[in-house]
Image (cartoon, rainbow, N blue to C red; front, side, top):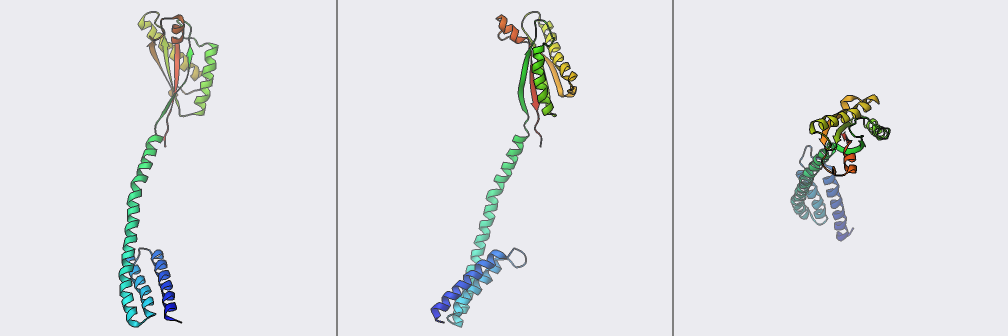
Amino acid sequence: MKPLQQTKLCLLLATSLFLTGCSSWNNGGMSRWMKCALLGGAGAGLVGAAKSATAAGLGFAGGVLIGGTLCAFADNRDEEQKLDTSPQQEMSQSEEKIVSTQPVFYKAGSILFAFDSSDISPQAKDVLNSILQLLNDEPKSILNITGYTDNTGKTDYNWKLSQRRANAVKDYFISLGVNKTRIDAEGGGIIKSHDITREGRRDNRKADLTVHRPYTL
């Protein structure tokens, strides 16, 4: 075989040996730097052997230095990638956890009452029955009920009336099978906005219902 062909063949074998060996060895036992250094020396020695024994020795020595340096560079790149990605992954997991544990509040509906009354009308019961379905679908949800009045009459009386309206709604849900521990009822007193007109006062004689749905991991 001609010297040029021998040199090309040895270069091909040396490159294959170096790439295969460095990628397959793990960190156990001999260090990665030493392993790649020996592979680099062996590969360069093969190339030198195609020419002479002296060239083989020089090739081995140079290959040791080059092989070890390349491995050290590769190790540093691996460590940099770990340092770059780890904080981002931890932050993403932390942010996701914070978002996923936030409770959700949404207004389920409102019902109106007649003047100076806490009785629930048939139309109001239709609204409450639809909210009941929401509570059944969300067994861990909590229902908040707040009763209100218009500005007609004394303040103390209206505070008590607003509480009676809230309690009337609570009692209705309990009669439908909802556990009382899932219901919070309170009086909100007088609503002063829109109390100038008859229609505004009518809309203020009401109870607002809000569902609190906790999100837990």
